[in-house]
Length: 234
Image (spheres, rainbow, N blue to C red):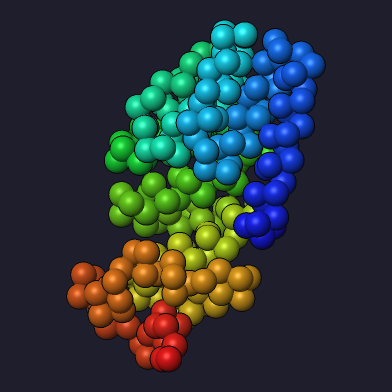
């Protein structure tokens, strides 16, 4: 879905939930659903206000705490996000999404071991949720430089769910880069690119340039890999 189309979709959702609230002012589910739409538009403060109201109406509404946690996390307020995800888990102990998102918040705080515990719990709780949790755990192992485990999770993600395949191929390719497995690098980066991912932009989010990567990792990339990761000349 294109960005403008997404905004229009969220605006319509906000309008519909607003009408539902007018008809039933104590409709907690409508408040938190509207909050989700605000959060996805990037209007996190409005989202938090709606989730606050939902929680006032129903203090045991686990999803409202979960969704407020997402808004706090997007604002970079990881401690508040973790507190809300933890409350959601207390209210709903098998809430796999809350474990997964709490893991992301912990990872953002560089608490990698705690994050891995949460991702593993999410994987064990809900089979239809495990692709995202495997991907997130793979990223966390990657950050810990536990590359064998990262590769295993990226590969599992690719096998389980195409929604995360582009990023999983790209990040698995990054692991192969460090290992100098050039054919595997080329294969995974090509697949990510062919599926629509801008691998050059993604690489530039991690490194200033190919020479920057080579300097930091004490490696010389083959010319075909350099070409894949270098912006075309104007």
